[in-house]
Image 1 (cartoon, rainbow, N blue to C red):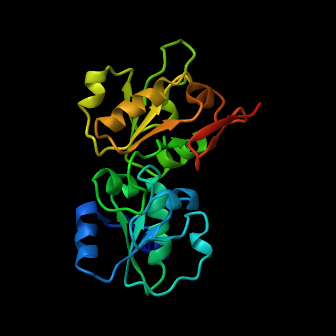
Image 2 (image 1 turned 135 degrees about the vertical axis):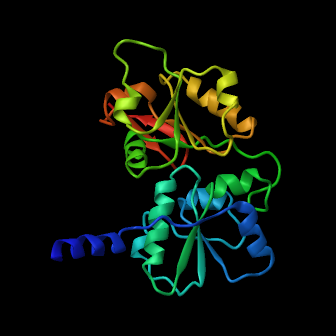
Length: 245
């Protein structure tokens, strides 16, 4: 009985899935002046480029260290790619009895691509290609992030087996354009290439077609074969990759 009690207690204190709000639901709450605070957990450099009006910026990396006021309802706004970070942020907020936290489904990407008001400058927007590192992808898979890996690598006998490296994650092998654009545009896609730029080009085309949650694995197959060892390092705030031997 004592052992069963320990299991029950662990279950009660384990992180629970957090309800998500859609962009239209959040817009209605803001338009009707409901008591809601939007917390943008993206890096400050991305927040300054554009954010939901009225949102406050507390990057995910420092959220746990912050002493926060008693928000009635807080909506966590991530980048739409690292949904695991948004979940962790909401879990941290929900530990405070004065805060009830939810997650913005699709993050800032979903809000922005739906044409809703942001603080970003008007006119042509500077292109920003979200990228994830090997360690990011391992964490995302381990946390159960709902995503699809799009395999754009040139087939070879020694390339990494994605289904073994990321068990349980759906993989679309070497799709043609018809297969890609027939997918759900609201799904999260991680494109994996050979490091030749093909993944980036495909991501741009997907964005233009209305897919707003697309990211590229930095280094592609090289990063996979090295298991994230020094050689490729992602600079997530700028969307560029610095090679380090």
